[in-house]
Image (tube, rainbow, N blue to C red):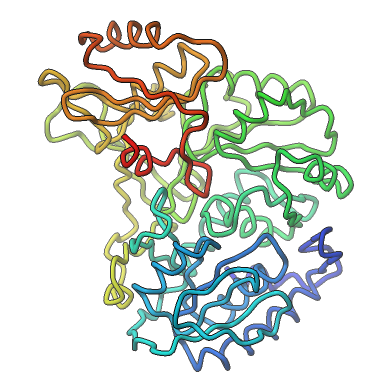
Amino acid sequence: MIDAVLKHRDDRPALIAPAQDVRLTYAELHDRVEEVAEWLLRVAGGRRLVFLAPGPDVEAALLYLGCLRAGLPLCLAEPQPEPLARLCGTYAPALVLAPQTLPLPDGWTPAPSALPGYVAARASEEGVRELHPSLALLLTTSGSTGSPKLVRLTAGNLGANAAAIADYLGLGPGELAVQSLPMHYSYGLSVLNSHLVAGGTVLLTPHSFIRPEFWRDVDQHGATSFAGVPYMYETLHRLRFEPARHPTMRTFTQAGGALRRELIAHFHSRMTQAGARLVVMYGQTEATARISFVPPERLAEKIGSIGVAIPGGRLHLEPLESGEGRAAQLVYQGANVMMGYAESPDDLSLGDVQRGVLRTGDLATVDQDGYYTIVGRLKRFAKLFGRRVSLEDVERELESAFPVRVIATDAGDRLGLHVAPDGAVRDEAMVAHLAHFLAVPPAAIGIRRVTELPLTSSGKKDYRAAEAAR
């Protein structure tokens, strides 16, 4: 992938960071990445494991691209002290690159880096690691930020997914994406990768999408696309966001979980009226980022679907051993499928155990047009009165029937619900509705009201936190 990025050597803008007053052309990006790569190889002492806790800045992008250019296996870690410390404690990298404002784990000695605002830290004791020659990138899995479990990706995985995304979104030199999601999250990273591969521009901003400064940067620099996860669109809906107020915006993409059908319809309508498009997508970190998408021209008739496979990929259904119902496990095949997981340092030497095939763990159906729909999760089930109950179905049903956001958990002989209401709704009404839907006694359902659902750093529902707080 890095070769595809660095082949652009003209005066078109690659990275714009208004808060830093930085505007890098592709020619400048090429030279800076080469310099950073040479420096990284020196300070790392050869091909060794590097951790980067990226901020929303040009320096993080240069360090990421510099590691790819230098061939240094890189882990992108959440820029928070505790998750970073847990990962460093497990994998003992040779080098940690982090913003100067981020407290480093105990035992790490900071030194100035070649880039302002960042430090290059070494451990007092470094483990000797055998690294597979194809290993390029490590990402935390969805919902497990700070956990030792990492996704092992190759440069080929990154390149294949970036090229496929650029293909189906029609990206090119005229596109300018605002970096609305963090780099350590695979969806956010895919925005950077796909636009740079296509010769487009990425607008880096430290501002949250709910701040007027974010949209000021969008309008002043003529951003053409925005990427968001469900809670971001839920928030924009509450803020009565109107795409027509931002006339340069042509594309809004959504992934990172299922968005409520009525909100898909709402934003599709508003964006169409404004001359823009909504692209609903599905993916997993294990597939580098993206697996499928719904072509915008089919969205109105396919609301609720995850669409068709990305260019170069294939989808099929694998029947469950139990043979229950119409649903089966969704399986994806493509060049963007990870080599496998790492759960300990020894796993970093492993080769490709997936062979391009990913069993997603999602249950799905497919219609006569070849469009797939997720209907549940293999491991997200509760057992009530001897029957398996899909927790995904419970969440989807309540969120469709009431103005709420829900996390459903297995509470033993009861169903536990964390409910964040967005309007007036009675617990008794939700319990009665769900008891009828599931054909169980109301006493089998418990509701815990919260102001906000716990979310991961990438904006997804945090099921682990909900389980812990039950």
